[in-house]
Amino acid sequence: PLYTRYLTPADYGCIAVLDLMAAILGILVGSGIAAAVTRYHFEAADRRQRDGVWWTGLTFLCASASTAVAGAWLARAPLAQILLGEHPQGTYYVCLMLATVWVSAVVQLPNTSLRVDKRSGTVVGVSLVGLLLNIGLNVALLTIWRMGIAGVLWGNLLSNTATAAVLTALFVRGRGPYLFDWYTLARLWRFGSPLVLTGLLATLMQQADRYLLRVFLDMEQVGIYSLAMAFAAGLNTLILLPFGTIWNVVMYEMARLPNARQHYAAVYRYATELLALALFGLALMAKPLVALIASKPYYPAAELIPVVCLGYCVYSMHEHFKVPALLAEKTVNLIPSYAVATLVNIAANIVLIRVLGVMGAAWASVLTFAAFSFTGLIVNRRIERYPYPFGRIAAVLAGMVACYLALCAVGAGRISQFQWTLLAMVIWLAWVAALLGRVALRLFQRRWTGQVLPGTGSQMSVAQHELPPALLGNPPQR
Image (cartoon, rainbow, N blue to C red; front, side, top):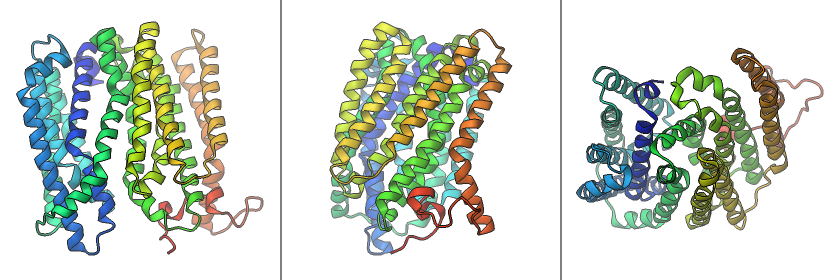
């Protein structure tokens, strides 16, 4: 709400384009090292060897971040021209963005270290304090000092620096004496280097549309589209971040479980349905939410939100489809899905933006994410096939789309915003009951009563009715 009242859509668009460049530099700097360190952490024979993996990765990150940011700083003027056009403060904004990139890149491993150690409470605590600090700084810099775009960039830099200081101190305290090993670095690079290409392609796949909107339309349309994407991407991240935090560790443990294939399929079903429910709720409430928290120039974003919500639901499926490649250490198998999706994204945006305007970019995101997830499925099924319940998921998504269209047909221009909100809540709660009612009942019976009511079944396999034990807190069977 603060951004939309103190920043114009054009200002919001400038921030979105700077975020695109920051993401590209962050991937070049990171080189997939965080994922590689996580992988080889579990192969280390003892604590000293594990600490060496982490220290080696951090050393590489510091060196690569300094090199990349220094090179970009030397080219800051032409870089600002490419990104922001003739903006009078473009070079200043680029310098602030580069400083934030360096801090964010270096803190990757301290943050990942806490996650691998399953110190979720510490991660959440530090992240929450950093978020509150970021909000406080942005509020002060936007409302009191009226710094505009620079206020947002300074707020991000200062809050990231404070968070990085805390996480780095925890890392140094918990990882023992410094140890660097060239052989370990070679292994990390071998695993992580394919992720650089996939990371770049992923960034272009998700954010190239902002730049193409600037080229074909204007920065104001970039801002409106970015707000719509922020709603969907924010909710998607809010759900997937805690899931991914533990999933990137648990999926390796789950591989040792009996009937692991069925367990992976069960996680896919429940995770996808939960995310679909959340995004469906956002789609139903898009108009009231945008009217509540955004200023009038941003109202067109409400029409885009349902479309991009559908895209993000499909996008999340790749988190499951890539599991066979990660387990087999074939990260090169991730490249085709990113490459195909990037090509689809660029081509679809060029065509659809010209025809449909900003709505064309929203539909291009759906096509892009579908190409991304299902290309990954096709490629990785050559390694191992999991019995994913595609029929059920397709039926759920089709039903949600039909319900949304029915609400639009009934409510467009005929009912008040309050009536729309009430009807949307009824529809959403009906879907919650349909998808989660039986599961909630079984978990309640199993956890609290130790009994199963007649007709619900006394013996249920994990693959059919329950989440895998590794996600429920039960130790894996070895």
